[in-house]
Amino acid sequence: MRWIFFAAAPLLCVPVYLLVRYQKPFEVISEGKGLREDFMWNTYTDQLHQGKSEIYKTGNDAFEYKYRLMEGYRFKFALIGIEGRRFKEFNLSNYNEIDICLKAQQGKGVLFYLYTAFPKDKKLNHPSRPHQYILHADTTFTQLILPMDELYTPDWWYIEVDETRAGLGKPLYEKTLGISFGNCVHMKVETPDVVTIRNLKFSVNLLPYFLQTLPYVLGYYSLLLLYYIINKKRGKKLVLLGNTAPSEPQQKNEEQLVFDLIGTHYFESNFSIEKLSRQVNLSETKVHDIIQHKTGLRFKSFINYIRIKEAERLLVETDLPVYELAEKVGFNTREHFNRLFKSQVGFNPLELRRKKNERSTKQDQ
Image (cartoon, rainbow, N blue to C red; front, side, top):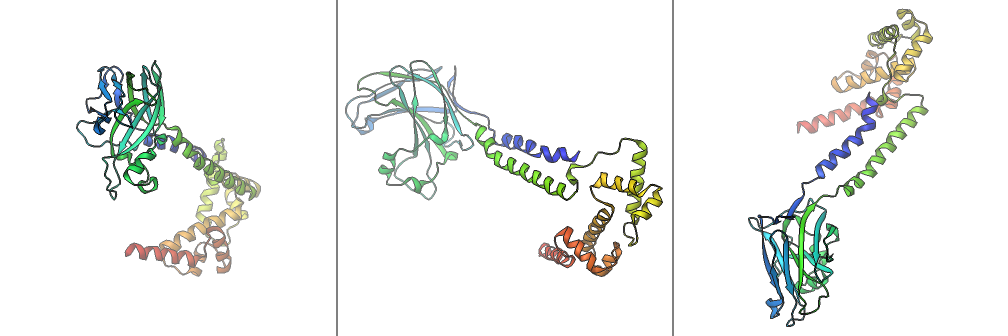
């Protein structure tokens, strides 16, 4: 039945939308295998600024590194970076969360960076834009789910490149250049620490996308309910809800006969329920009940509905004058025809024809 389709349409569209949004997880580090072959690693420390901090990669099955911050540079740091081995950039724009499992022997907050390219119109004296987050770590493995919108570019970096947050806009995750893990914050100088990353992958959390659909779904059902209420007050049944066909064979035959004769004689100006009841050999009450049950309309309203629909078709498909067209579908006066036409269609006949001609002219151009 048609009402099932209209009622279920959002319930069908929402899963399709979520399916389109879904992406297979993008795995960088996997448990038991370590860093994917598509990636390579490098180390970066404050030795670039005459510092003495150290960092070494120590594990293979898991991505593990050992570091030690040393005196020598005011801003001490030790990072191990991950870049594409066969590609310069990789696209993370379709993902909205990061799944990380890690532990640290000493520290509690591991520095994590994601690096993206700049907009084409920006030329900065820096290789990339960093997006930072401090990952909670413990001495045992901790599984973290990090929403990507919680990453942020640190203020010191904007000062260093003389740029503003608004000037650079949103991160270009579709042009991600690399990832890095670093030392734990607030680590004491000369204290060795070991950080182990069991897995790192980017995935899609569908819940935010589902919540995005709720206002549209609720709006759809609100309009559907409003449409139902308005039509119920008018004493009509919703066309989209359909109607249950009579169950008895005799009723089916009577109904078919009534509507066959209506389709044959509706354009006759003197066609009436009295005439129809005589032709089908049923009482006027019975004929009225059949029409009302099937269409939600009384006899005269249903006949006029059919006539206006046919007139609408002829206005678009033919060049018949309006007065001739009105007579052709069963109206005695043009005034009556115009009034009913505008009430049902929303335009008067000449306006509808003019709109049709304007559309045809635009298509020809």
